[in-house]
Amino acid sequence: MFPLFETILLQNSKLHNPEFHLERISSSRKKLWNKKDTADIQKIFSEFDPKLVENYQSEKKYKFKLSYDEKNAEYSVQLYKTRKINRLIALNADEIEYSLKYTNRLFFENLLFNNDISINTELIIIQKGFATDATYANLVFELDGEFFTPTNYILPGTKRAKYLKEKVITEREIRAGEINNFEKIHLINAMLNLGEITINSPFNIPK
Image (tube, rainbow, N blue to C red):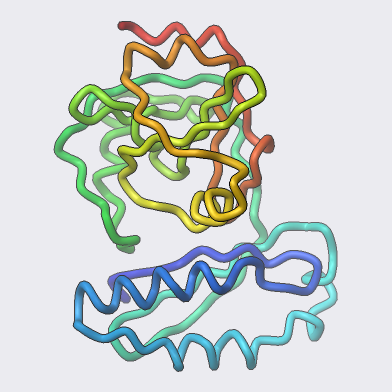
């Protein structure tokens, strides 16, 4: 099993935001193996032709999963189904460390299982009193038409990086006790744009 992976949106005959994924792959290889080269990954991207498969040319979302180590990589493609989320629960989990996108995500699964979290519920992970991420997405908090993402993240996602670069969202520290002050909370990741999964207040997060 490859230790790291990237999930890339495949839709309308194209892989979306590959430059942000390449940047994270380069950074991850540098941290783990002191290697930044991504020529092998770029070769996979350039040789992959979604136009050869009729379904990939549609509005349907496909998950292009790229698994890799310091010198090898492989990919798989599967249809993506958006999970319906209608409730958020804040949970303290200072012990979680996931600064790289590791294939082993058992601790996230255990966090959901051990706290009896239902399929339509997602967590706001609290660390040292601050909101960070959900288990599979970055968070964006909306207030008066402005969009904020926590400075205290667990994993900086590629969609988060894109929105920050485009100045769609801005960073700010969000304390657990401030969560109820916001109007909406959005989940974003490589497969989810801003507004695709939105939970409206009241959130009823204990202070």
